[in-house]
Amino acid sequence: MGDQLSGTDIKKYLKLVATEDCCLSFRLIYNHYYERLFRQAMYYFNDFQVSADLVSDVFVSLWQSRKVLDKINDPDAYLFISLKYTRAKYIEKIYQGKKEVFMETLPETVYSGSEADQELLGSELEDKYQAAMNKLPPRCAEVFRLVREEKKKYSEAAEILGISVKTVDNQMNKAVRILYKELKEHLFLVM
Image 1 (tube, helix red, strand yellow):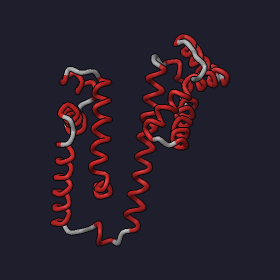
Image 2 (tube, rainbow, N blue to C red; image 1 turned 180 degrees about the vertical axis):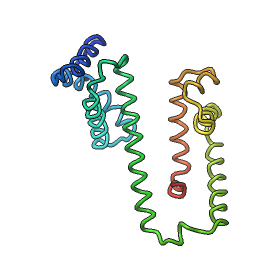
Image 3 (cartoon, rainbow, N blue to C red; image 1 turned 135 degrees about the vertical axis):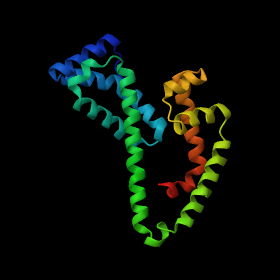
Image 4 (cartoon, one colour; image 1 turned 135 degrees about the horizontal axis):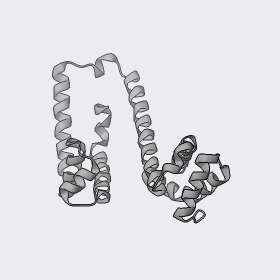
């Protein structure tokens, strides 16, 4: 594991990076967090290069926003949330690229069907979505509906259900994995 630093050390180093652009302090923070962030990225993607790139992006972003680093109260949370956002941007970029390539290679008539065709396709997709939702465990489906369909924040869903925010996060990850597995062959249709 990276160099072990106390919370006080980390905050001190963040302040030095923010106020003095201290590269040595930044390196110590990097060494402390890199392996943990990399393991988390590997959990997301199970791809060495993608994981290394994502963690690098987190640290590049950290350096670019260094002037406000002394305002961070919880560096662990900040960096792992940064990794989640970086992961989301990466996934969005990947799927956007696939969507553009897919749309460019189809003849015009394939994806600009009649309104009746689009309604039928929408109805079929809705049926497949509902069937996939029915495969979720009850608590998992409940959390997913609150967060995705009712647009509740994780904290709101946790309060409504009487569970922790971490449990909401775990249930959402589980739901997304199951729904992806069930719907992956239809994903190009909804992009």
